[in-house]
Image 1 (cartoon, rainbow, N blue to C red):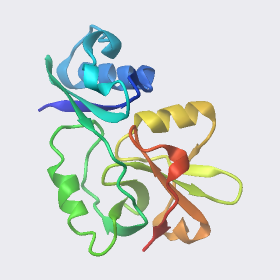
Image 2 (cartoon, one colour):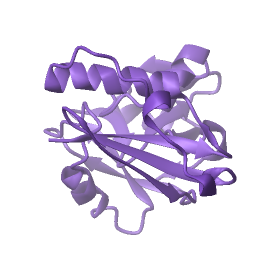
Image 3 (cartoon, rainbow, N blue to C red):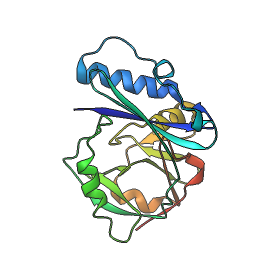
Length: 193
């Protein structure tokens, strides 16, 4: 079983490496019993053609580093989400195998993505964390499927606050945002279906 780290490379700079290093090394310790600490800044060599523009840097690893890939990245617009229940889904680590998430995404119908509900609580979309605006604060589910690196950064900065959010509470929020390592928090405001 392999895991991945997806890192935003913007104009030749790898973003949010401290949080990526923390998650990668935590995953390596729990899943593979690794005790040494990797530093992604030391492991990743940037190709010359990545000095301008935005690229997705994907690091695949298991007990050892498997591969590092780069591809140009364009944000796909997300305007609406369909609620999907998945009580048995476990994605606590950023696994390379995303078959279960892809199967949920396939159920989106006319929506752009799905918002996954687990045991009555809001979690994430198929590929990003979420936050909801209550008029004063941006609240992010305290029970995400995957604790993302951008989420960790936003929590540390105080831009979002954790709260357990029941599916029945969604109507209390005026706005929704999705975000991950590749999608900035500020650029996505959307609606629920």
